[in-house]
Amino acid sequence: MTETTDVSTGTQNGQTQQSLATAAARNLATTTKSQPQMQSITSRWLLRMLPWVHTPGGAYRVNRRLSYAIGDGRLSFTNTGTDIRVVPPELRELPQLRHFDDDTILEALATRFTQNHHEPGDTITETGQPADRLILIAHGKANKIGTGEYNDHTILGVLADGDYYGDHTLTTTTPTTWEHTLKAVTPTTTLTLTRQTFQQLLDQTPTLATHLHNQQTHPQPPQNKHGEALIDIASGHTGEPQITHTFVDYETTPREYELSVAQTILRIHTRVADLYNQPMNQTHQQLRLTIEALRERQEHELINNPQFGLLHNADLKQRIHTRTGPPTPDDLDELLCRRRKSHFFVAHPQTIAAFGRECNRLGVYPQSVEIDGHAIPSWRGIPLLPCNKIPVTKTRTSSILVMRTGEQNQGVIGLHQTGIPDEYEPSLSVRFMGINEQAIISYLVSAYYSAAVLVPDALGILEHVEIGH
Image: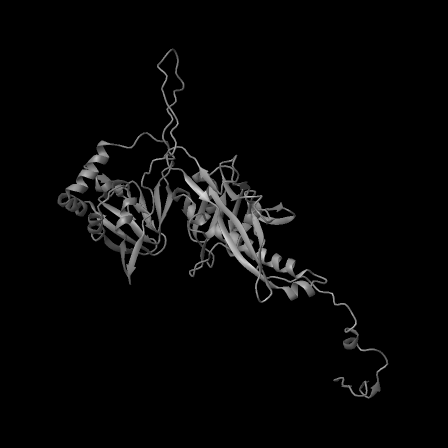
């Protein structure tokens, strides 16, 4: 039954009202209210877990041992419809063409590649067959399979977009055979260049022939497996042999990370700041929400910034691909084994959910670890921290980061500067800018930050992780 009230007589359903109504009573009551809420606030685990290093000079220089470029990068491609072509300058990523400066010849070389398509399960190369071509993986994924210790087939690695195989076949003078079998895991597009085609171009271009000859007659100085200048040490000797002489060489142009900034100007009308401060201070609430937004942007930049963001600054050797698509325990183990003392993973929440599905499918149940009173999923005791700033592509793929942190551990560190003028929080300042003719107060809110990877193996990335599988 619907209840009706006669406002003119104060009656309900024909009965006289006997007490004060709640609508009228609220006019005399103090409303209990919350602080302004903000949906975009996240846990910001990366900001909380990174060790922050004071950078008084505004820049941080990472000094390392001298490393030699060995041409193990990835190549880039362009396409016109289904026609795919390697970007000519990217061919310098091949060891044989490192530092070759004739773009015209590289352009001619790029046009000589032949495009091929392989379905899942197709064999691209087969162990023991003649090796006579360079293979570039333009798109897709292929397993590199070899013979294991017990004569079984073992997956030795995964090649994906931008990788290459068989570059040694172009310059060898004796017939060779493939050492590994390449088998397509997904639909894969490759570009191939035969030794015969390369030799024809070599006969027509003396500058390229001279470059290759100089590479063979002037090999790179001795280096360790990380590409660093070798420190020559004698060990295991007896008697009085001549002890080797050595020194530790440094990079002459070390990288410097400058502090970046995120800024905004907060405006508040003086009437609001003067009259409407009970029970909450309007200026403080405006600043609180503005600072929350700045911190969210700060974490986004630490992940995605092209100059210092972690996704863009991981070493190419520390980027690996999933074996099948979705993130499996095997993939995370592969990521962990490439570095020592990993402190935590960082992944998009949807990626963590995809990993959980794979664990459930395999009957594996990872344990949780407690951090600041929160139960966090983990793998091998290393927490999987959520971060929604890691991009998810239109094809539903993402990345998983793992890192070792701290200066003492030669890990990943955050950079900031404390003690700045008008500091409101560490490395965040709020400066009064004045009052304009419309009686509006302006505050400049600035946050200064950056991140540095001290050695390449401090940061690793599992790329092209399928989360919609």
